[in-house]
Image: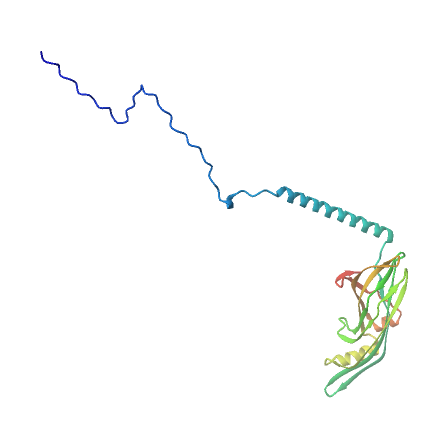
Length: 246
C-alpha cells in the first residue's frame, strides 16, 4: 500500500516570533548628562547685593540732604544774612585835558572816586578779598579812565566802609569826534560815570571766616553833575560774577 504524500514544511516568515517563547526586555543603559562648556555655565546672581548697596546709598544721600537743608534753614532764621550794599558816594575829576595833535586826539585825566560799602547784618561780620575797581565814562564805560586794586578788608556788624580809588591816564588815544564830545560834556558836567567793582565776600561768624563768593558790582548810569549834587546811586550786584541781585 502506497504511503500518503508528505506536506512540505513551511518556512517561518521574516520577523516571526514564537508566542510561546517569553519576550526578553531590552537592556537599559545608564543615561549620562550632557557636559556643558564652562562658558555656558549660568553666572551667580548678585543683584540682591547691588540692590542693597544702592538702597543704602540713596538713604545716606537723603539723610545728608535733610541735615544740610535743616542746618541752612536754622542758619537763615537765626542770622538773617543779607548781602552788602554798595553806593557811588562821590566822583571827582581834578584834571581833564583833551589834546588834539597831528597824529590824533589824546586824553589826560585824573579821577578820585569813593564807593560806600555797607554791611546791613546785625549778627554777621563780612570780609572781602582783593578788590579791583575800574573807572570809565559813557553808558558802556567805553572811555577808560584807569583802574586800581585795593587790598582785602573786614567789616564789623552794621559797619559802613568808604573805598577811595584814584586813577590816572596819560596820552590815551581817542576816536575821531570823541574829543569834542568829552570837552562839551566836561563843561556841562553831563559826562556819564561808570564804576565797576570786582571782589569776593564771605561771612564772619563768631570770629570764624565762612566761605567766600565772587561778586561784580556796577555803579553808574549817572552824570557827574548828579553825583556832585549829592546823589548816591545804589549799585547793582551780581553774585558769582553773573547772577544779578538788586
